[in-house]
Length: 566
Ligand code: F6P
Image (cartoon, rainbow, N blue to C red; front, side, top):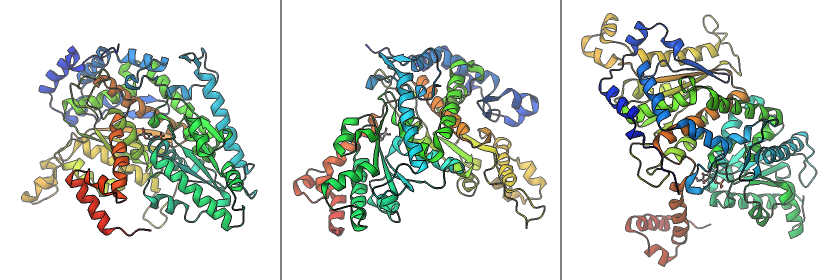
């Protein structure tokens, strides 16, 4: 019997928010002028992160009612249930325990869930991953010819790709330079072809990462990679063209990460070379499981432990800090305010850190696969709008592309700005006047944008610059465009871990308010099933083609008329 969620829209806090909204006039200029403490009072620490919420469209009263809403939907009960391993992923009848992946080895009392000593299992698997990572990094793990591995190619998609690739890009300064990582995800054959084009099969190791080990894209790419490797090794005279030699090559050049170790063996990968995890780790929450094996090779066990420690510090913050100062809770509630009361449809995440250039792509799966739902966890329809569209690009590139709409468009686009104090590359522009530190120029843009968005520029201010009257309206900035600023000392593995866990928990908080199961993803299934059904039609099967609707048939016929077979 499934316990239904509390319907947020029936709570007294929701009614209070509705009334509050009706009388609400955003006025960041006025609020800051009247209250010199606003920035200090609405800035909070979480781990190493400094989070300034003061440029959001909220008063103390708004926040007070939002926190009341969190209590009325029993957010504290749901956090406790998640951390204790209750089966809060109702539609898949699973615990949700990604937080267990970063509990310290010394955690006491131990976490035992469904009769499983979760802490012991996590530490045992982590030890296997770290031992493997060390062997690759040290050159002890060699390919068939005895040459050390120079390139590790992670083959996975969704959560088995986006986390590792985002984190590898983010932590480049911490990565070993003698082993490069590459990633193949798309079933577009261009991806595997381009990624492998200049690689040497004798020094390449593939990690096939798939929670289910049943994903069409990943298994297809893994087979293509195996074919490429065999062909290359035979051509180089590194192996005989025999079945035994091929199997031996797979053992040296392929490892796997999965919860389905039987399927790994069926693919031909030695179970000794497979790293496991558990059904209570959702794909988009799995970077810190064995899915992060490629990252562990790149940044080493110490870097990976720092990432885990950073994540754990935010888990502890979520668990222990009162909601009034609890950053993921407040940021999740702010998103609810924007979506359900101020009509926001999207949310921008704008890192002023080039190394975070894949962060928005990673967040898109985390947030939208989690909260893009129309039914609640008991199967009843949602009672209000749910997940917003997350998107973003690194600053300052976005400034010269889409910021116009955020500054002066008709849409409300709440935005998170992320920056670090210490750059990875402290360059000085020697030839420019004053020889500016370029990171400081970069930060000046970061500060300027949230200031402009919050406070805008009035018509009188524009006029005072001598602007012709008919041009004034075009040059006015309305302000009251909400932003959150997140700053950190530097982009270290620990800080990246904190950012990831922060957004995981923001997503969770929103899901609880909306009463949805943020940990299933049934919405991706239909397309997968149909792709399998349509594949024969695309290959030219007349009966399969006839079975399609007229639009789909027409599109496939266009392809068939234009195709050039291999
Ligand atoms: O897109 C659906 C999905 O199931 C994601 O949730 C998951 O991260 C991805 O596919 C890859 O799945 P797997 O790791 O099982 O190959």
